[in-house]
Amino acid sequence: MNTVHRIALISDLHANAIALRRVLHTIREQGCDEIVCLGDLATLGPAPCEVVDMVRDLRCRCVMGNHDEYLFDPELARAHSSGMILDAIDWSREQLTTEQIDFARSFESGFVLPLGDHHQLQLFHGSPSSNMVDLLAETPEERFDAQLGPERATVMAGGHTHVQMMRQHRGTLVVNPGSVGAPFREFVNGCKPTILAHAEYATVEARGRDVSVTQHRVALDRDELRQAALASSNPMRDALASPYA
View (cartoon, rainbow, N blue to C red):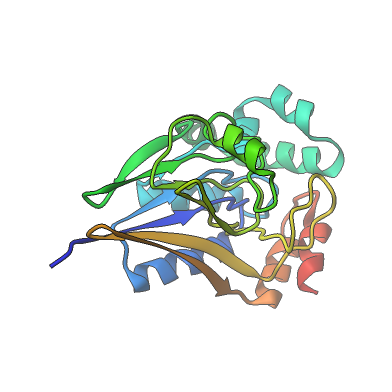
């Protein structure tokens, strides 16, 4: 009988406690051997403290996203963000305790996990070399190859773009689980996104020598999301509420 090893991937939570709570409930119902967080926990959304505490209680391994770095490196945030986004990052940092920010500081740049007895799963935020690289379904093959780097696992997974993806590239399955807290209808490249009213995650499973990847969407209560945004003092609260009107 083949041993089954199932890993749940969550990414880009962005301080959305409602979405994270629903996703974790669904993961527990389905069952998994471990959860990995691919970064961007606690900026932009209405509940940074609650989301950090929820992830810390999971005791799961976490990859450092660019927005996690922004929490303890304000200069980096200013170099890459401006306007209301920067104001929301600064607000998020102000809400968190020193201990909570130090938790984000402890995240790993990336790592490789065994996937069952025969495969490996490589994990990162943007790409293996940078948490700010966009790996997309439409990225040209040669650039995609360079962004992945020379070391390859059976499955390679990162977030950052807020767009779910699975792409087979030269024998490797490249996966983006999408965003728990703010899934985008399409890649925006710095433009204003259209936020979808669900939460996203993925599971990667090895059953003997077989490997499968499943993308998940979890329905959310639009009114609950809207009320949570409006109840916050986040400078982006109106923008956070508007997708759910």
